[in-house]
Length: 143
Image (cartoon, rainbow, N blue to C red; front, side):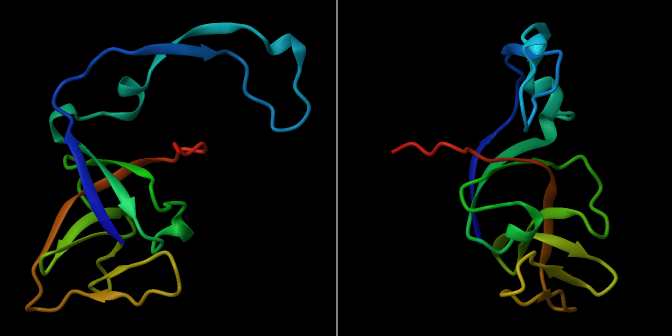
């Protein structure tokens, strides 16, 4: 899996979109639920630490078991302290990857059984760039 940085998130731009009061049914929709409650700014909802947050796009399938797929957009927060079990963006020996942090066994794990763990040895250079807070997937691809 490789990652491609898109941009640093430095300022919040306000973009409020409609937020419907009712939940969206995955079964039979209710006609009574066709009204709007308020507006929602996704920046406000998804980003807690403006200056410490960045986006990157995923390339590869090593994190599919965690719901992170090729082409997904990750929202990564550098202000969140990385802990065991967190999904992180990390650089190991110069290679950047999105993996599960396993501090107990000193390794980075994929969420796909086809990929072996990446051991973090005494001589390894590990830099956790940030903790993955959200992933965003487009269900309609351009093209």
